[in-house]
Image (cartoon, rainbow, N blue to C red; front, side, top):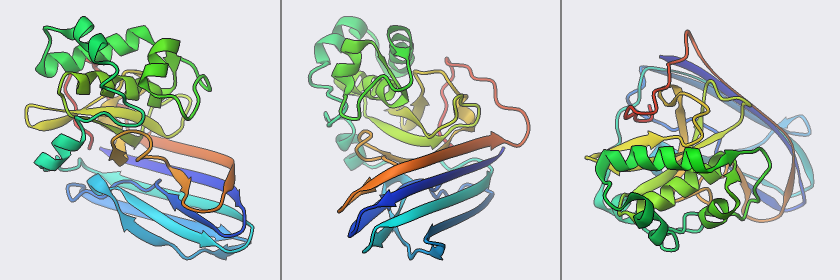
Length: 268
């Protein structure tokens, strides 16, 4: 499968602003072909970038602006083949079973056992996916950046990251390591960066998307972490910025895979 993705960002920074950006496709040795380009300009001049490796093949691109700057970012990648499954160590399995900022599994433990008491393994993955899909309503702009899984459950609505946070929290409550993955998602409508959950069952990480808005087989990982606090596509580590434009594209060369929510799928 060949997938082509792109992202265009435009933002204005204040003076003395440091920016970390995570929009590049994660590195994976399994791809048969991987071509990408990244250009960042301020005032028509190329900006110096530092690439920093993150967990699970993800990459930050770091930049600094001493003066207020109007910045444009152009990223594109074409990826062929499937990624190799990740070799997961015990440290990751411990990290991703703990409660985190946006996936408060400790607070949702009674809910998880009330709904899924006798369910385990891959059956739990499917049960949680279907339950979250049925309980929440997808509504653009319906949540705040500070909302976690508990607030999402109370409001019964959200965007992709809210669906993923709730699924992750419920899975962790039942001792299943789970994490959030930021992805490019061909077939997503409206097109944007997308967030899904991954859960570790039977020796492998399987992706679940409670929104059901795009086929999982076509998704490309950008990064992954405990929750969206680890996977933001743009953040400041000093100073401030205003995002003025974001445009994302993601397509498959050929037909999109047909999504079957009952299948086990790994990101590749």
